[in-house]
Amino acid sequence: MNGAGGQSQEIALSPNARTWLNRIGGLLGLAGIVFVGIRLHGYAGEINFQRIGVGGYIATTALAGMYAVLNLLMAFGWQRLLRHLDVTVSRPWAIYAYAISQLAKYVPGNIFQFAGRQAIGLAAGIGNGPLAKSTVYELAIQAAAGILFTPLVVPFVAAGVPGWLGWVSFAAVLAVALWLAARTGGADFAAAVAFYLTFIALAGLVFVAAFVLAGGSGDLMLYPAIAGAYVIAWLVGLITPGAPAGLGVREAVLLFMLGGISSGPVILLAVVIGRTVTVLGDLLFFTGGQIVGRFYGMNYGQD
Image 1 (cartoon, rainbow, N blue to C red):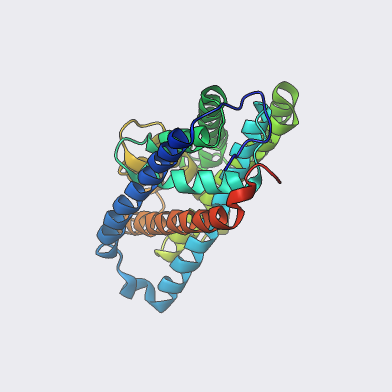
Image 2: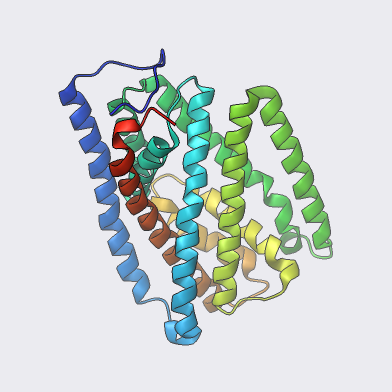
């Protein structure tokens, strides 16, 4: 099952080595399932669904499904990064590899998703170098993308500054960032940046929905700022060593940034609902990746 399509970056491995590398990647994904189960069990006692009613169950489930679909953007972005590094893999294989490995981010350490993806990629015959570089590029793009969203939170950090100024600044820096990505990295790199940016923006809107569901502000004018606050909290969690999936870190940042528009209990409920949505979404994405792997397992190197 070769994920790379005839590249100079391809490496030769014995069948036994491929098997063990696939097992390592799969085991890390399974470990992620265990920690996801622990996480969901904890969240079950924290969400007061009586407060949000039956509609809360339906909305949370729908948001989880949406988040699972959004994860495809991350897989497509990674695929384009590999192509930028002269390694061509099919979309089904990229979805499979990303979905199986991504769940390991819930294992304490916040690094095992990358180790799992490295193992799966090596088993497919891709070289260590391009895989490692793709991880570095991905982290750098995500970190830079998170910073781009900071103008949106202007209403929360600078009293009296109109919200529209943040939107205009955000649109401007976004356009410049995409132009620079295309100018310096080429079409594939720019496409990867666009995929990651789109995922982050839509994930922010998913949190806005969770915030409203929890009883937070329904002011449409504040939605971009709330989404921006979530993205910044997500970024801080991403770069914090040892925090599985940013656990605890994002909550603290959101309490600080949203404290001026909602009470602590509402913010915490929104955070828990948001966490439930993302964990369930990642679990659904993992399941979808398994299905894709079974149906397209013999054609990973062909689009």
